[in-house]
Image 1 (tube, helix red, strand yellow):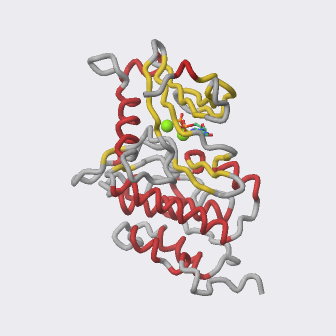
Image 2: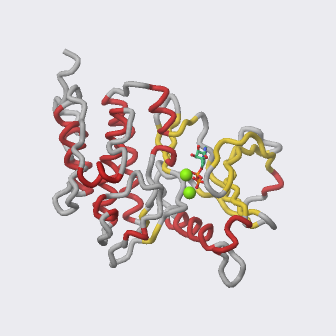
Length: 276
Ligand code: ADP
Ligand code: MG
Ligand code: MG
């Protein structure tokens, strides 16, 4: 197990709905760092189960534990342990050193090159595929829940607070508990939805945002009915991949395994004449 008393709590590195994230370093071995995601119990009282445990926190831990058995995926943040204190639940997480959220990275970088985007998207797809293999639907993929380490551009998926187990049954709209940016139209429409097509939609949303520096859809209306404005200077392959991930009908949408095989990811195919 992990002994919290051996760690010294440092700077606040992030804030979310239910709590705060701090970096902490090992008192003797200063180079050993972890991230502590602290969630106040009082804010979750109404979610306590019969034993007084917080069900959302337990669900977050349970979903992460599915992803922690070897072999692990390097693109999913590691959960070392979790402890229950009197007022707090603390998740002890791998600390992503010298990282930014994807949100901040997009803001700071401005025009992101397709090569950079490809590097990020490959890792996001790896994380998503791994989640499906372990039966986890993340349910809240957006740019503040993705960390990017600099300068190596390693991607880490974080925040399984809205994750759901994938079963043989489809999800209902209410199962999508995330912020909404990544919610696929079939879920918004109130129909049932499946994890894999929902993941593909989110991949399209993320690729669009990386390449344009803004959301593909700014509101519900445009998500349901609007046309997507894709930058014509992107490579044909990139435009095609975004368009095929963002097909509203989940049956016609690209399938998860097809995303990985798409020619935009195939380096032997010349996919951009932009530089000439
Ligand atoms: P919430 O569930 O409240 O949204 P998150 O798990 O998304 O909390 O964490 C909030 C923020 O804290 C993130 O957007 C990120 O900036 C930062 N953060 C979270 N986990 C880590 C980590 N392991 N390493 C570095 N920063 C992190
Ligand atoms: Mg979050
Ligand atoms: Mg959360």
